[in-house]
Image (cartoon, rainbow, N blue to C red; front, side, top):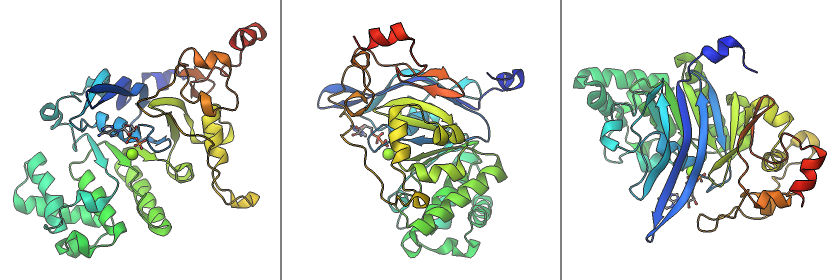
Length: 337
Ligand SMILES: Nc1ncnc2c1ncn2[C@@H]1O[C@H](COP(=O)(O)OP(=O)(O)O)[C@@H](O)[C@H]1O
Ligand SMILES: [Mg+2]
């Protein structure tokens, strides 16, 4: 139960009932369904799920950056209480980068190979903040130093930098217009383990220095513990669990979350291999009835095939599973009927 002080605090970002469809060969495929969550200023939340679960689509929808064959088919996103025009690219421009920014995965594809990096960081400052060229270059030098690159290196072209340095440049670009929310879409996936750790450390430091709210998208739960306060677990386009990092790791409730946690290598227990979760997630074309996880779920009951379980508040977090809250004896008999 929230105390009155927490209840009064308005979230910086509120996503309510978000739904996204992709159009593919003439048909409309439901991809994201009923995604609802709130984030407070300065909070770091991880969005975790297997590849294809809809993490990038959710991030793109929030930033108003969906590809042309995708459409928001329901729900809304509010920034400091005001509804964002996420389905209107032009109307989103004043909000994108100055309120919500995205650090994409794969920095090499996102940077322009023929321009010096200083120019690429300065550009959004000119366009978005109306700075003069000299002001924008000064701001870009400041941003480079902020992400741990000497301002002199700004003359380099992207190919002259290492993968880690390029990802730092992407972070500098995301911070150029002083956003309050940064979405990192697998920002370290393409990097080696040591560089990964450095980039996560940088994001964590910037987060507290700039009081940023961070949505860190990853398919790797082991990177979450050090840099996030909360974890949201996504499966087949829906949130299935949401809780504090401590709760999710110590007491995962959804059977999918349990399997994800068990699959993390744990050297202390002599278990170094990531254990894959048996079975495959459903495709967009073939979403089953009821709970999308049921064919892989060790605890599936007949009721799981009937209706999608809603994401309900339970104990300190939220979970979408018929096992929570635990059923009474007679309810259990019905569920198994
Ligand atoms: N541009 C697209 N057109 C059609 N389907 C897409 C497109 N992008 C993603 N998808 C599909 O949407 C689902 C969610 O993808 P995505 O959001 O990229 O997941 P994640 O980031 O969790 O890996 C997947 O089934 C994927 O194949
Ligand atoms: Mg993705």
